[in-house]
Amino acid sequence: MGRGHAPLRTCAGCRAQVPKGDLVRLVRTPDGGIGLDAAGTAPGRGGYVHCATACVEAALARGGLARALRTGVGEDAASRLRALIDRMQERV
Image (cartoon, rainbow, N blue to C red):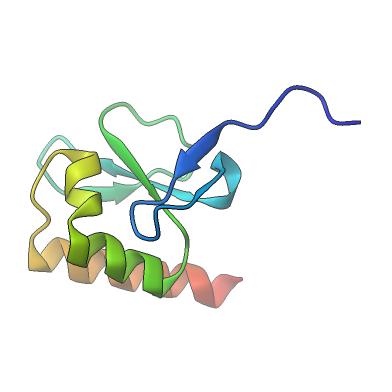
């Protein structure tokens, strides 16, 4: 039997509620950019997405990631995010 409960988070792309460990946390950096929060402990506004190209694209297209981070997501930040997710998928 497991202990406790797993906290749920919502993917900014597909809007599915899943355990926090199944998602990647993205955080708004002080300069307004977007960074990966691998440990899940970085201060500031954060948003969660699945480590899947489809979810990242949906989060960018629908504005879910911008809404979660409360900042605009420029094309340069979006392309860096896409490259980061692609690299993460290659490792898995």
